[in-house]
Length: 230
Image (cartoon, rainbow, N blue to C red):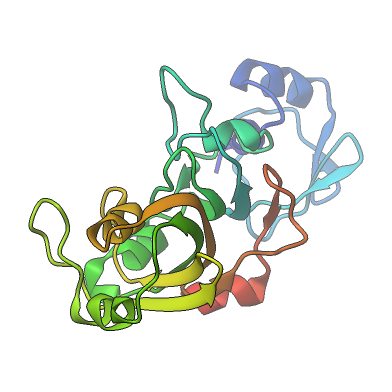
């Protein structure tokens, strides 16, 4: 990869700005000062330093975000802030959310630039579990468990895949689904006469929300967490 492209890719400035850093001799490759901005580097094996800081190139970024209310799960939106507005460190790494949470739904959201992994996780054939904690208005009935297992029929006639309803009492529950239809959990609850008042995703596949993350905060996934998703 060209040295200037790598530095710009890693958010050390615009292509013009990093060219200037290189030409002023601020960048070392394997201990040697490099002043040619088109110098080719092995981004995975070469030792690259800029202003005494070593650069570790990451091809793919994997981020766990605790999504807050009021943010759209998209890369851009004309009317509302997006989840990417909460992540300032990787503006040029083509990050995107894996799937969507409604604007008023909070909790676990995976952010990455790994398209292959995202496709695998979102494919209906993969049957990846998505677990939600919810509060709702309405009366609980033991029949909910079987209705969710058999497949809830939504208002448009679509029959959902088998899901799990776990009653927690006091109009609280967990719901585990394998799909991601538009407003699916809310519509499933509406089909049994209830209205969701609070919704939080607590796990996605083998990945569980880090409860130490405050809403709006994020962290990188560990190597073990990435491997569990793959």
